[in-house]
Length: 381
Ligand code: OSB
Ligand code: MG
Image 1: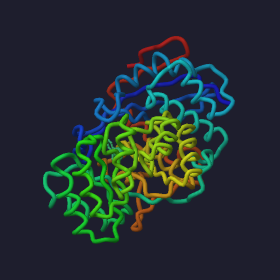
Image 2: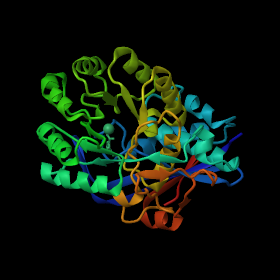
Image 3: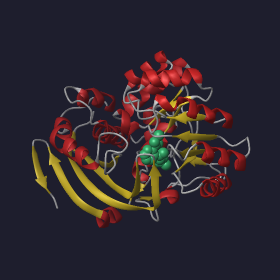
Image 4: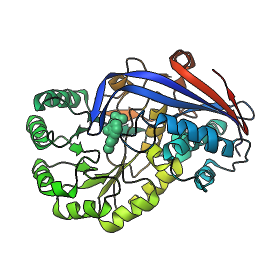
C-alpha cells in the first residue's frame, strides 16, 4: 500500500560535457525536471522526467510536463490509496491523453517508493534478473566522418559493447562506412536517424545494408508504421523503433505490420514501468529483442533505466553510458560507472534506487521549485 502526501517539482540545469547533436536539433546541456515524491510517513524518493527543453524528440517539453504534473497528474495521485505501483499507470491514463513523460516521472517514482518501503532493490521490484547490464554509447552527429571515427575508436577502447551513430540526410552513408571500415567487422554498430527520412529516401537508405548494422533506429516519423514496414520488407538491416512506440498497442502494431524487428524501450516515452514491462513481455513472446534507450538522463533517471534493463528480454546493450560520459559531476553518489567490458552493475543489494541523491548539489542547481499537496498548490521558491 502506498499513499503520496506531496510531490515537489524542481528544475535543475546541468551542462553536458559537450553538446549532443541529433537530426532534429542540438542540446548544449539539459534542463532537467526532477520530482521528489513523499508518502504520508515522510519516506521519499527522487525521480526524473526525461522531457527535453524543446519538442525535438516528442511533443513534450520540460514546461509541458511541469504543467501536466502540477495541474492534473500529481493531484490525481496525492492522498489516494495505491494498492501497488502497477495500479498507477491506469489511474494516470484515465481521461488524460498523452503526456507520457510527465506520467512516467510519477509512475516510476511510485515504483521506487514502494521498493524503498519494502526494502527491495528497484530491479527486484520490477522482476529484473541481471546483476550487470551491457552498455553502448550513442555518438552525436559530428562535423566530419574522421571526427566520428575518432569518437567511435575511443568508445570501443573504453569497452562499450555497442556503438550507435546518429545520422541525418547528408551525414549518413559515408559516416557509417568510415566507422565500419575503422572498427572492423566484429564491433556491434548501429545508426539512429531520429525520424529524419521519409519513404522517398528508401533507395538511399538501402545502402546501409552494406555495413552489417545491428539495426537502423527510427528512420521515419513516429506515425509512419506502414512506410516503415515497406522499408523493412526491402531492407536486410533490422529496423528498431524508438519514437513510434508510445505504448504496448504500438508495439503490437509494429510486430503485426512488420514495421520493425527490435524495440528501444525508454520508460519515459511509454508512460513508465508498467507499460515498459508490458512491451517487454509482448516482445519476449514474439521473439523481438528489446534494449533500454536513454534520454541523456542524470544519475537519477539512469538508476531507473539500469533497473529496467536488468529484465531478461533486454538482450541487447542499452544506451546506458556511465555518468562521466555526460557530466563533469553527476547528482548521485556513487556515480554510474562501466567496467572495461562495457558492463554497468545493477545495484541489487541496496533498497530503492541503489545510489544516494546529492541533495545539496541539486539545491545549488535548482532554478525553480514548486510543491503540490493534494488539491492546493504552493509556490516554494
Ligand atoms: O533517439 O535515443 C535517441 C538523445 C537525445 C534524443 C534522442 C535520443 C538520444 C540518444 C541518447 O540516443 C542516448 C543516451 O542517453 O546516451
Ligand atoms: Mg533513438
